[in-house]
Image (cartoon, rainbow, N blue to C red; front, side):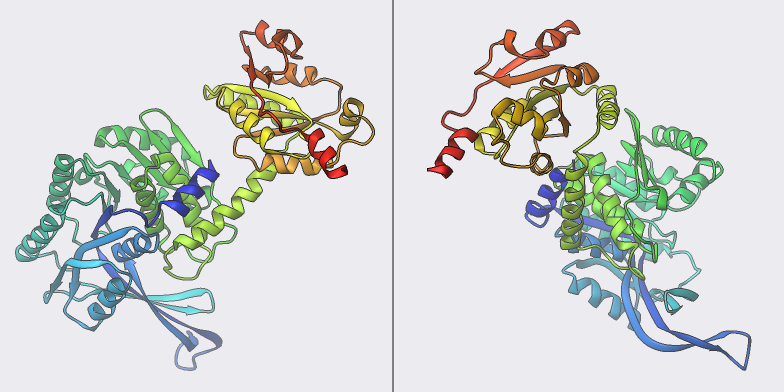
Amino acid sequence: MKPQLLDVVRNQFGMTDAWALVIGDLMLDRYLIGDVQRISPEAPVPIVLLKQQHERAGGAANVAVNLALLGLKTRIAGCVGKDVDAGSLLKMINDAGIDTSGVLESAERPTITKTRILGGHQQMMRLDQESQQSFSTEENTQLQALVTAQLAENPSIIILSDYAKGVLSSELCTEVIRQAHQLNIPVLVDPKGRDYSKYKGATALTPNKREAAEACSVSVSNNAALLSAASILRKSLGLQFLAVTRGEEGITVTDENATLHIPATAKQVFDVSGAGDTVIATLAAGMVHGLGHQESLQLANIAAGIVVGKVGTVPITKQELINELVSQNSALQADKICSIADLVDRVASWRSSGQKIVFTNGCFDLLHAGHVTYLEAARKKGDRLVLGLNTDRSVSALKGPSRPVIHEQDRARVLAALEAVDAVILFDEDTPLNLIAAIKPDVIVKGSDYTEDQVVGGAEVKSWGGQVALIDIVPGRSTSKIIEKLAS
């Protein structure tokens, strides 16, 4: 799975005319960071010696910046005040290449600003600036007109980023979803509140665990009840899928077919601020670039694991995502080399999801193009390819004392790096018959220089309803010829 995600991010993100429309509550996140060395003599509170100040896009603005830094053209609709903070926020958004023509500047309210005071990495206080007044009829009318104008430009995907600050009224959400249906545009929602009825008909919701528990009226500590209720909620709202972000527990997605859990990937957690924004933005980017929602959520989960390792609201970048995928690919490749117990468990898991298991075996000494072509063809005979690899001892018994040229662990690691190979297992017997009996593959593959009756394990595979497949070998490619050429 990961190699495909890496290919999509590396080769497709930023290479399309598709664009995203983000609608929601725009915020300015301000950070005052310093050191705490003493308590104030005026009151029992710590004194923060200010060292740094940062301003970052927050709320729906952070969603938009995440999208832009992932390479997706982005427009944003929402509301700011007519004040200095609005100027700072809009400049930040524009500098990221985001179109702000859908933003209402209102004299009736201040720009929403959250000021966090940190002593080192510890948040000590947060000061919020916002209006408690509902949006006026005039403001709602202006917002609706701005959003409608953006929808007329036919976005590729719409994100509703709701922080319950008033932009996403029931009327606006209902109208956006209605128009999106008519235009066949997917709508993703990061929801707020207990009543999700205003999101009915959206493509998906991405609540966090606490938000989902509140909306479903279940205990946040009862995972089984929560996920069961989330599945019912998905159906009642007519969603294609619902993804519950569960912090250090990862992401659980439920759709019409099944419930899938994606484990968390974060190595360390400094600050979860903005992680939900990164999840929905990366989910949207993946879907726009052709990934299914489960693959897109796997990508979003990886992105969230990166941003929670930073202090404050910090968006993901395309290069950071690529770097992490490359790192995970290396670990994934090495993990393909397994013991017999691990292999049996993996095969059982693959088979339980309806996947066809293919088996082949060989020495694969001095890997060459003929080997790679053969393994790619073998993989096409099913869904998972298991490769039984002769140990050094068994290679010597077959090929003579001068072989193998490459040590068994090195051969296994190189083969594990091939996308066509799903598992590599070393076997020391003269034949892989015991290995074949243990995993019971659906297809056994050998080169066309064999006949079916010569394939070890062929009769056994046929006995449980499997088949033998013979694949043409690439002429003129062989390890023996390479060794002869090197020796000449």
